[in-house]
Length: 179
Ligand code: HEC
Image 1 (cartoon, rainbow, N blue to C red):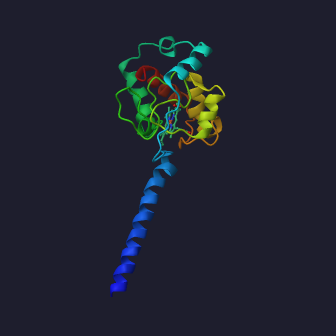
Image 2: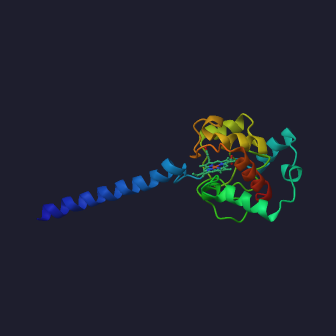
């Protein structure tokens, strides 16, 4: 009888360890979220140095336009919605949004790839930054139309958005909301 309890307790622990391991791994597997380490990616000055060298336009001013309320609703649906990009499910957009399981897209336009705070990026995305990838309306469009092809081996687990109009709405949303 005593032996039974000792064995049963041993098995419980094993089960708990397995459950913990699975619960840490599943978000990674499904969403690409990293459970533990937070890596500081680049110091603010380093980020500014990259951007300065490239002499990019201010995309927020360049593409600024007044969208109607109906357009804004469509943009929001494309960004949030399950039929759209589901981007909201993983990404924060505004400065004061709570952190989600993916990097924040606050001020994403004109920013080098893989520099958002509090997120452990995949090495392939960091490599792309080192090779000069900067997020602009064009590169975001290319990325979300086929993430795996644009950055092979990245951890954003989403199917590409094939519909060009939906991608345009998503990017308009980012121009409007992420500044
Ligand atoms: C299932 C969760 C998930 C969804 C849905 C998702 N993303 Fe991502 N996204 C991620 C993760 C995780 C990364 C980081 C990838 C890496 O490190 O390889 C990422 C990275 C990015 C980046 C690069 C960020 C940076 O700092 O370099 C952009 C831009 C982006 N996503 C835009 C979008 C857009 C637009 C949508 C909607 C069409 C979207 N994402 C939907 C999880 C998601």
